[in-house]
Length: 239
Image (cartoon, rainbow, N blue to C red; front, side, top):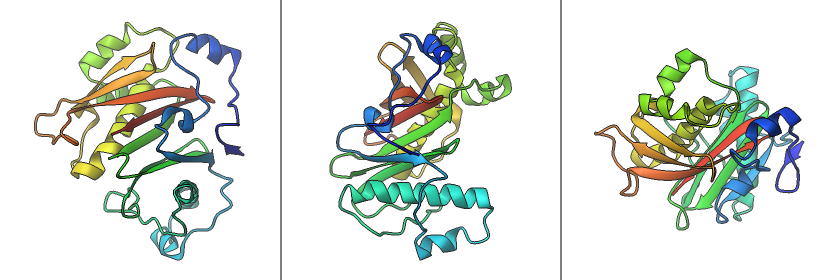
């Protein structure tokens, strides 16, 4: 199954009532990202692409699940790169397992529940991109304490009920980190970033609260967008 702007995501009546007017239901990352970004997304078990020989070496001996996710992400990324006129390049993992993009390109990949998406752009148009997809189910109380700051936990009590806001916070922080780390090389904890969710507009603000964390492009706060698609939270941060 290939997903894109022309393929609607199914949703149940329960999902619709839970979402209500709280946030937007998107068809995919194409609807969430700036127009300068090339996006490809589809089911992780339906890529139909082979790994580049250099990529194959990176997952030799890996468990089948890990190899499938890796191959799906690379196939999806190459499809997005072709939309920018870039073909047949290996996408090797860097020291933190993030893809090493071709010169002049920024990008991000996400895998989730048999779903894969990749987003790429030219670096003269955008300085960074981070995308993430997660099942829209709540985090356990133990994990909430590791992911959400006291301010975020307090604010979430005022958000409309029936929506997995804790998982949205998790996903949004993942997107922030994917955008942030390639610029700075700095490792962040979930509690180093604090979010303000704006349900009415499906936007969020992500702010660095760790004092010694470097800024990104001179900023300590970035804007992001979020949406729901087929039972998933989709989040993106771009600079």
